[in-house]
Image (cartoon, rainbow, N blue to C red; front, side, top):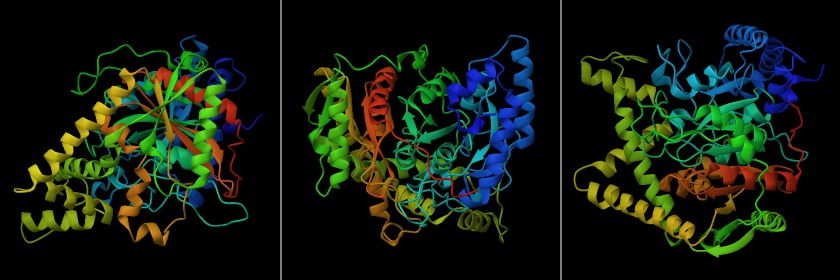
Length: 495
């Protein structure tokens, strides 16, 4: 039998539906792959092998009765930020030790409703705060990719590093992820996978551990554009429990994948041509434009003048909201509790021991910018900048642009514990330079593999779309995917 873990999500789903193999066989294949890679890649923080087999058996029964759902029998990994009933949900943080919720997140509920199978919970940066997946309480995730003739361990990107690494290394057919400032698109670019952050409000945030509530959005990471489209259709849907959830019909995203780009206008923002951009990124960007043009798209230079303020504004808004959201973790109701002589000391000890260094840094920044005397100077001003960034995009779309093409990241994946990065948080934050504008404006953005650097490591391009026009992004991303025709199989050194 073909190695089932090497099939695309679409091919796996179709094979199960046609009874070429069973959902149980697919689940077993993935569980075996996870066990073989667990120590080397550290992509999973909890493996639910028994639950996966039970869910797969139930899928096989539904298929036998002719009651198959759109994702029937497809084994998925779940980022540790999504609440899963009775299963480890800790946001990769010590402060949530032992937490197993009594409820299921809206997104995962939708996936199980459509027949998907849960393989386990995926590692991530603690509370989704990071660009390299090195801040997890469970240790760093290792990128399945390595440079040419190198044994150096590389980061998979963050915060959804476990999701990206697991998909890239064939440890799940697809994975849930979240994106607050690039946490789907950056790890997808680093691992040669496809990741889409849908429009804010497209996926319910109910049951997802909050980082920055006005920026967080769930989305999938998968191996192909088609696979990500299939997953997103199941993940979306109106949810009255989330006040920001939009009551709109969910399109059949997969039907748009082969639509092409003929007649579309693709914008190229001049502000993204930043000083010091590596030549290989610049070359890749131009190659992407050439591919789209060859398929009938018109290329148009545009201006997004407030782009230069996006990163500093983001690192005011996001930590401010994080400091508010993380105030609930105090050692009283659930998770880690470190005793003290009184309740104040218990709060202090629990939070000091429970939160990691990066989380503490962002909470402190957020508390500072919300404090008396600084709220107007920092937070209010950042929100005004955010409005200007959103207006820049609105003007571009009003001028006839259908989508915008940019690089996804300023470089390929870098080394674990890279001294340049780990000693300089600001340098690490610059990894989000091409992605944060999308979250600040609430727009959809997709990262698609488009090439490799001189070391043979994946590089991605990003497409940004109009609100609730993910279909155009899937169509344009598919053109890039087909044109690039990359071999996106990392050398299997981990087993």
